[in-house]
Length: 293
Image (cartoon, rainbow, N blue to C red; front, side):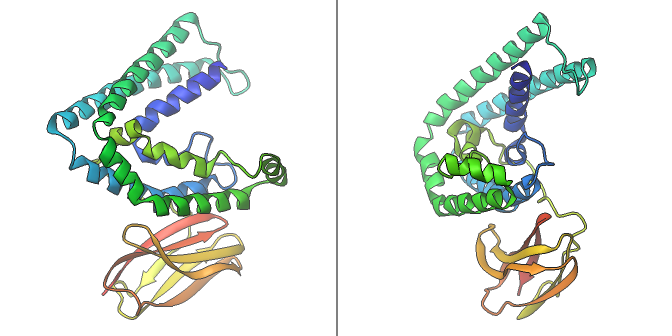
């Protein structure tokens, strides 16, 4: 129970301070089957849209409210630093086999951190009420994309689930709390408002040694995609627009052997602009930017 409390508090504070990036990573570890693929999906598809919607909202915020939000972020940063110091001291006191037992003073510190973060979130929630209409509009604008994200994430979860997990989902009517269920946290008013629209974008997670290259780039009528498959299995390659929306598949769940591959794509149907290739394999997902002239 104590370890769970510490873990939840750690994730909450860090998530609010780091914006959508940490939320996409999750707090269950990146080494579980499919976790890296889900993280890559969020960074390639969800986060660019969340960031874009938050930037739209920024233009509608009053100057005083922008300053107040900056203060709240700074207060959360201070809480985060205090939490880090406490976590490091607890790590030093324990071992993987024997987690540390919290002292009464440490319990009190955790309670103070939790109370302080809750107070800030209540204030942000009250501020968000002033912007209920634009927040609802921004969420409605991307409803079709949210539905697609949900479908895609459920497919990723199902693909990487063990037989035991699939059986449990059948028992609960196919419901699954991971992956797609975490989409909602991006659009909770207080958390969405706290996201820093001026924070630098985090590059999408790439598949190690994927060797993804596009040429010519910029391209006219056609271009060539070179890529490496690290684990034999189904490969999907899609073309995304500059906002991360899927335009069309180039390759759909085609089995490919481990090794280097080349694909030539006809781009004549695309207007001039910026696009991305997105390749999804058993190892994860990667995106590659290209320009159509």
